[in-house]
Length: 92
Image 1 (cartoon, rainbow, N blue to C red):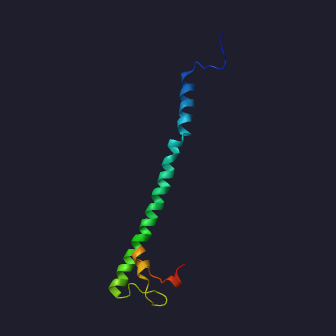
Image 2: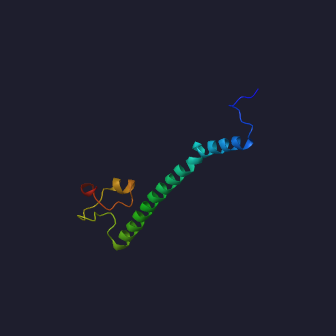
Image 3: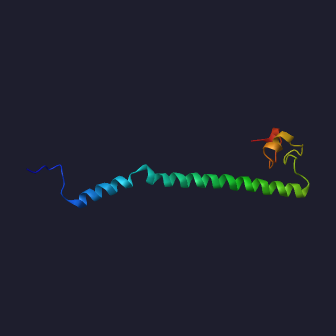
């Protein structure tokens, strides 16, 4: 007695298993991790650029003053964001 729902072909079982692995969330998590890594790298690059610019302002004697109106930047702002280049009136 033969049941058509069961396959005796071992290759058919291997193909189904391979398709299952390809569609697994574990496989696609690599793309998510990669996107998260890129976002983190971009944020770190922006922060490093800000620090380098702050060091240049320190060398120029303009650190802690707004790049637009030249008023002092609040100490609280500089404590929170040491590379801030704008006063509270000129934040975006």
